[in-house]
Length: 381
Image (cartoon, rainbow, N blue to C red):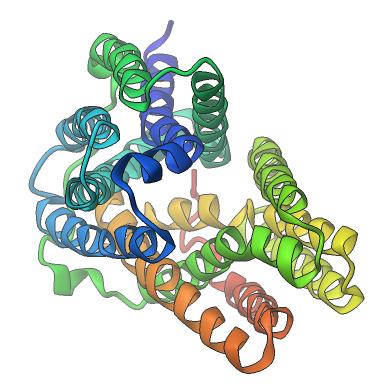
């Protein structure tokens, strides 16, 4: 393989390493809950406290980015993810699960920024859009992890044994491909304050909105279909799976569409499609329309993150990793804080159906801000 192809394979593997444990964990949650004796309230707490790990990870990566090579950070973060999950799955106490989830959140955040910067370097070497394909690797890894976890549960394989096996296999692949990872060019603002430039602030705002929409759809898809629409838990699970799958498939087409239409026009068209389609399905208010609405939303939002990452790599005075860190800085509060809190509060006041209209508003704001995705120079890939 040529050097660019080897680099692409190595970075794609990082996306898979981050996502496979997520899907595998989701499939084994019921068994792990019983393993530690957690009820609904305790399990909700177990998944809320780790947001502090995200905050810690964000602080760590903001300090390290630009000072430690992305190759080293990416490999170290991937190794720590693979080492963290098996002991977590073997935990026999609630406190150990909380500690493990918090550690996982921290190391995943440390891995995310260098991984994105390495993907942008591969895209630069190819000279054409590739970020949609990398995001598709993440989605495929999540689905593969979920299928692996489901099969392991059916065969009565203990969760810790499942994760030991997957971590060992992925660890061997990481060891074989780590040397293929590209080296990022140096330079950048250095200090955090220097990263808040006029060009990067709109990207941070768009990342906030993107994080809000994506997390809100993930959190409330099954609940809206199964409870609000009265379709039942099976339909809710099917809706989530179908939306996740179609969103991943849509990512495979994002790079070609972006290469033909450009960043701004692609994001504007896709977010208008997402807002209009999801809003119409909310108005119709049937279970079938609800499932279709989340599918349309997933397809329409597929182009947003690849565009934001691409523009983050072309900010004057910032290195790609510094630009990516600003995108992550914007996404975190939108996804981890505002999405669950705002829609939960609006749902309590006016019902979940009206609360989900905030997703339509956020998608329309993304469409309005898409004009800021025009590159300052002639080259954007």
